[in-house]
Length: 503
Image (tube, rainbow, N blue to C red; front, side):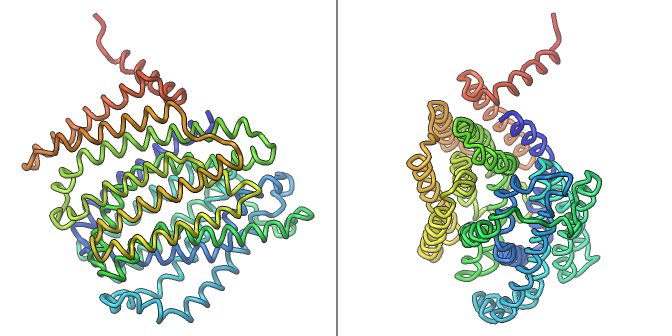
């Protein structure tokens, strides 16, 4: 767990640098220079490409995480595992391009209210899909060598710097919206080039075809596993992205754009989870191979607790300042319609973080097929809740459907892990953490945001954030909820003590 915390911390620092850039893009530049319809179109293109990416990968991203330990051999360039992965990704992308070409007209009919705007740019979905597939494979390869900081730089910083430049150029009138969208797709190529350059520098870009060798008896097992997780991964993307897509289909792109901005604000909460989950996947795969259930139990509870505490703090900081944030945003009155989207999506992210590495444990176990059952359940619940709630409650209904489906999905997986593997998730510390979050959330409704003048808004955001952080961190420290976080809190306390003047 120490390796995970250290690497996760470094990656989180880089990721939050990217978050600052992303916040500038989404909350300032996008809301100033793009209409809600244009933001909605961008989300439709990205969501569609991400859905196709799961199919195009043919499960190879998950196969890489699970079976890399069987290919490991530096002298033989890990038996050509990277070459194999790239070839599978290429075949899958070409197959998806054929399918998309055949069913493009049916896809466009989903967007009756904005079919013209979507139709003008739908041809970019497949190039974007191809770039996402290549990026995912290279990112997984870097993660398998515990190089998650490079991943964070490529995904969270480089991509967003490119998109910032595009946003500014569009806002100044230097490029048209068409070239802005083309540039948005091309920005993923820059992230890919960076990862390739880093892997060459790190001497990890193994592309010699003659080293390709699948260990005896493993080929059929890998194919079966790929089929199962491919379907499961598709279900997860459907569940994750179905709210925005159904808003675009059932309502319009404008509401999708408003929802996308609020969704972005809420997803800032899960940044620590992304870094920790990347390393946890590799470690869990090793623990399954070595049958180290004691280590897995410890990791299972520690990741859950640490993610709950970190996610809870970020959620409370965002929610306590959300009214002020909308006041400061360009065209904030339009996007303030998504206030309760932030609440419900934010809570869904905290819930997902609390359930920790459920998915990693199941996918690396002999019972990985259960992942398909749970994903199909999630996709079904997500579709049903969104279909019922979006017509009645609009964007807030989409967010409510998301939190309900995420809770049921995680309860199903956690119950299976407890029954099948005897791994316990809950602990006394996690109950205390949930109680702290619930009480402080209740206090936010008792003391709503007051300021209206912009300068006072800045001051109130700073004051509320300081009070929330001080109270929350103080309680976590005093109650000694996490040994891992306690180390960092003690270091922070020591640094603060040294900075204070002595008598």
